[in-house]
Length: 269
Length: 364
Image (cartoon, rainbow over all chains, first blue to last red):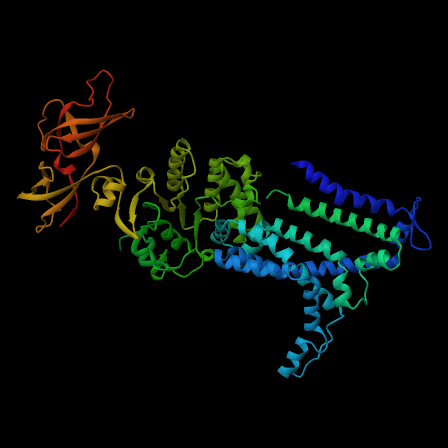
């Protein structure tokens, strides 16, 4: 039973990781080939302020995305978990629908909505409010909108999972002991759905750091994210060793985030 | 003016519906301060809904709920001075025993020093001082139960609601907790509303019992009254065991009346509660009220029967009797000693019934 799993992990996780790790210590020749030597220069370059700033910016965008996903996703997930079974299944379906739609179509749909002569600006114009048109596309706001839209289901589903398991009598007990809705929420509901929030944070934050397609398409490639830089090193600059070093650092950040969240999530619950 | 104790709880014509189902139907009930009242009934009878109406988890569709003279019909649970012990205990799994018990006081913004003292006090009362730092999942069922009780009494509510709190415990622990709860209630002088489907539990603990069936109170009274003088067939059958006998009234003589069962067996009953116009009566007889002997006793309502079945239960023997006329009756006799002449299957015996032990539960 275990053997296929081990083989799968070996082939698709361990081997590519090892290749990346080995490449990250290599050098690049003039035509973009990989020269197998041992050097720290790639890692020294990673910690160059230029790239650190990009890392920082990527983390910042990912953090904003995660917070918005949590704030928007929590009420949705909670309401779904408390709804009757037939409504719950319909809502779950609605959350899942974007998964089945092509990524490019979803992203271009947003471009159509946000661009200068797009749906949003046309509506604002038609409403004749005396405001607009807004320059939304190719701004940080557009990037965040795109990221939130792409990752929201990954926040909703884990929270839904833990909210559904929440025993209603615990909420009633909180009310019974004098907690109003706000206190019951902060003292009982949030702590008990924390595993879902932690899992959702992990599933949104980590991939959002590395996302490059949305930042390219909706950010207009004006502000590079770490994902764009890595992509460029491999495809345009043809500096695979440097791209590999960025990837390894990036992966280490994943692991550290995961371990921290895992620790918090496994406190007595 | 005489010092009439104020009612702590007053329900006036309370009705609660869920869709087309009426869970609680026109219930009126008054509970005195410091009283231990039990709502007893089968599952789905509305007793839990009644409790939830008192807690504030449900609001009545009709009628009024008064708590200590104040109309709380539509007051949310967090503004009612009422606390509940939940059937599943509903302890907060992410809090220690101490934090669970202190929750209500924290919500009342009691000063930390006073909070700690009151929590320590109540934990001592339920003998859980050493468990203060544990989490609920580290406790046994009985300990969790005591935490749930401690958590509910520490905010000093006016009324404590208990929703089948003992149903998850094993028999031995349950008996212990019944007595412990009763003692606690006397000590605190707190009004208890206890919900159970266990008639024995109700009889053991309560000052008064409300027998609930199909959303209504069938009978309200103290344990002996409920047991010895059931007013409806449901009450007679639900509490303890009862032989329910359909009969026609064949004669009256001052304070007594003669009834005839379908089999032809004739018995004499007290007619005090029999309406003058009644022609039929449903009569309840408790199994232990049937006296059985080898020779006819000098008593009323003597008849002969054969023992069809005998089930040994330790302290008692459960007998199924068939009277010579053919009526089947269940009887319970004490196993006084092993050497004494015992009754066995197939034996013919003399039975007698005191006329006060034939209780009319329905007459038409």
